Amino acid sequence: MGEIKPLAKEEISLEEAVSQPVPRKKKWEKIELVGLALIIASLSVMMISPGTLAGLFSAMVDKVFPVVVEVFLTGTVGVTIIVSVVIGRTLERLGFTDALIRVFLPVTKLLKINSAVLIPSIYNILGDINAAGKISGPILVRSGATKAEQKIAVATMVQSQQSFSTFMLGMLALTAVGVNAFVVVIVAVFLPVVVAPFILSKTIYRDTKAVDIENLPKFTPTTGPLPTLFNAAREGAELVFLLIIPAVAAVFAVIGILEYIGVWKPIESSLSAGLLALNIDPETGILSILATPTLAMAQLSETAATMDPRLVIGSFVLASSGLPLSTILGQIPVIWAANSDLNEKEAMTAAVIGIVMRLITAFLVVYFLTPILV
Image (cartoon, rainbow, N blue to C red; front, side):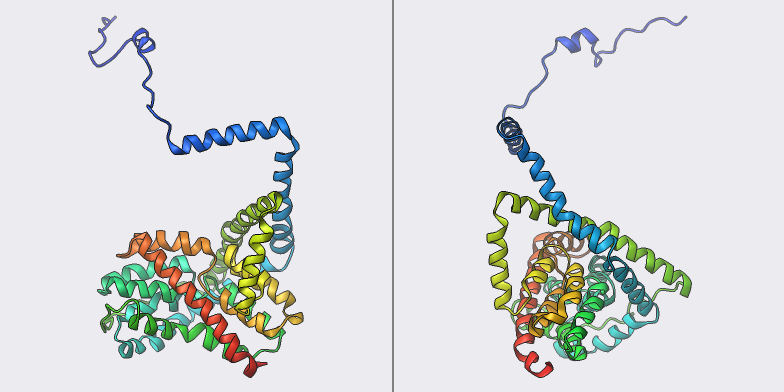
């Protein structure tokens, strides 16, 4: 039998470990104080009014259930989104995105900006806003784009819808009110790709220079027709179940809480008044801002026939953007900070500027175009 080795100097026995005092923090951290306040509040509510917590939970579930189940799971919206993604990816496979880039990039010479600035917004028309940042950010860096030009790229990117399903559902809504969808799409979707960089390069972000990209990136997949279709259908299902439904559930759960404690109505009234002033339907506008533009356009397509065409056009223009706010304030800053020269604050500021421009665009399009189109 081997002999028993004595404890090493750095090792301590069980008795010594028990006898040593456990080091404690000198002061509480802020998050611990928040947790303590929640514990006290929860215990107080349970003691004074036990039904309050149950009522709060029920209010959240009751607010989320109709949207998630009746709209996405048993309604046509979920299927519509999947089909729209299939259409978008099929167009991309047929060279639609690369053709758009070929058409738009020569305009950058006239604007005297780096050609790569337009790539995120053009790709975003058929792609999605997260992929646009991951793919386009490194391209901007390699092409020597200045930080000002990268900010222009972000602000221009949010002028396009973050999902092709939003575009397709919006087209249904425009058709329902008899609006000339062609003119609206040209003015609201394609024109801002040129106008936004021009305005920003002459005002806020002036550090620009004309640079051509010698080797244009290719966005047309090389997959076969059938894999393209099935992969697109899977991507559409992932979009519905892994992104849109969780986002909608989270937002409507919070709205349920705010309704239960009685503070949502004043917030909703303020938002509605502001949106109406911009000729945007309040109900779908709030959905675009807080939840998802796809759901907003889905609801709009079902009710558009009974609405004022001005509100339908304004809602479509607003939804055809980088909203909701969770994308502007969360996803875009994180993605662009990891894939470009911008930090999170710079990327978020540029995205906010882009959304403000989008709100102004919605008002101007409705004010000047509606008398002509309707």
